[in-house]
Picture 1 (cartoon, one colour):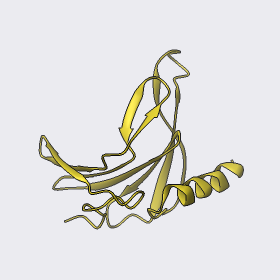
Picture 2 (picture 1 turned 30 degrees about the vertical axis):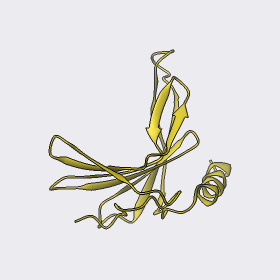
Picture 3 (picture 1 turned 90 degrees about the vertical axis):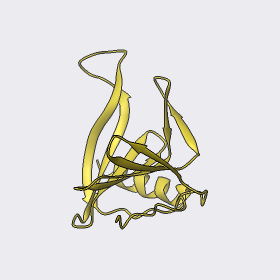
Picture 4 (picture 1 turned 60 degrees about the horizontal axis):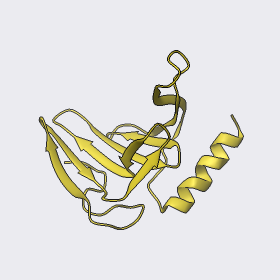
Length: 119
């Protein structure tokens, strides 16, 4: 069982949709964001299998990932064009910080701005 929210999206309060995907249980918010490179993502997801659970929160061009019950850190990634292959888009690791808990999008956006100001 996951310690992450799997019933209601903590960012917008919509009911999450369940989608099994090859032994992985995926809970997604119906709210999608569009990123550069014509890439669409649900703005909140939880993925679980027998070994690990991961929470993804997508805010603007950033992803905040939280891993399992034992981790106290969040990883922040930025969506951008690949340095090695121009024209291809991918998630680039930015920084690992103390765990960022889910909140409404405006508050998460403000936290990200604070972190990015120091990088």
